[in-house]
Length: 367
Image 1 (cartoon, rainbow, N blue to C red):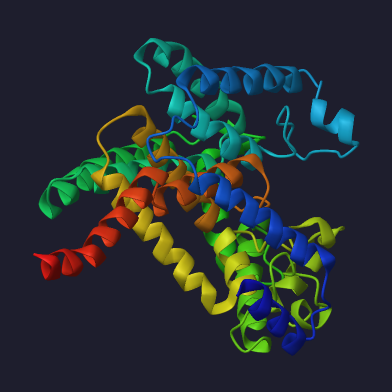
Image 2: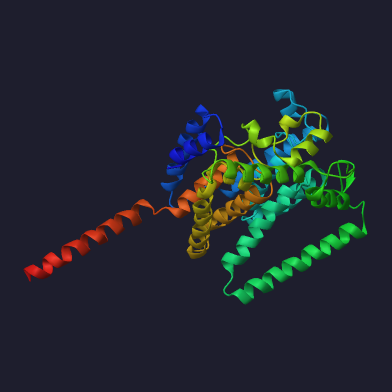
């Protein structure tokens, strides 16, 4: 269905058909079917493996602090802020923060993990890190709550803690400095960057890229009659992205606009809306169904991992996108497929029940 709708939508919008569209669809289908075979209680990542990933990222981050940036050395791409194994701090946050949360499930690892977190916050603080953590906390509060009143009370406590932290940040401006920018200024730029206009001196590129992504998604939906332009085809139709007003601002303030997330829309929700069209609604329904499945699971390490990956999914959808086949996105797909499909045993039991129902009238007639 996605192949047919995406092809028709691409033709209607005047988007050239790319072989990568079909290849992307095939690979995503293979990834989804692989996840569908995994029982929900499968331990996708153990705390020990997650801790190893955190420490490995931390080692290369320390190297980067001494101007030994492995990513820039191997790829020949100069990073605006060295992040060890990754091109930029947001990628580091989206890869490492879920691992940190999974490893945190083992109490023995927590002192070391807190030490790691101090270094991450001091050198690589990003909204992506906050997004993963916030998504995880929100999901955990909702899925563990016994009632709506309990949920609201828990969220109120989190809100008070966040408010106290913000008061501290704005009261002591130089408490945390990121790349020469005070944290309070950094937060302001990220928030007010969404309403920046040409000629503004203070802006942040990431919010502008997200706004441009909203414009590209809207234009793609209109030009394809709501069918989407096909998986992987966002940002390749010049007739569409040349109509984006925000693009003019980005061109004016950057030397190389083409590298600024033209095809990922800044956040995954923009990309999915542009490429899937109205089929993004069933995808959001799958997310809700997965959340309900987690709610019914017994408390276990597997459940904890699914909640972490759910928080990661929210960060990818609403904060910062990664490619479809980046490791964090693949883990989210595996988790979602596992949670929304019946396992082999349940499927077999269900088919057996149907067979018994069909044979019941025959048995009654014989009796």
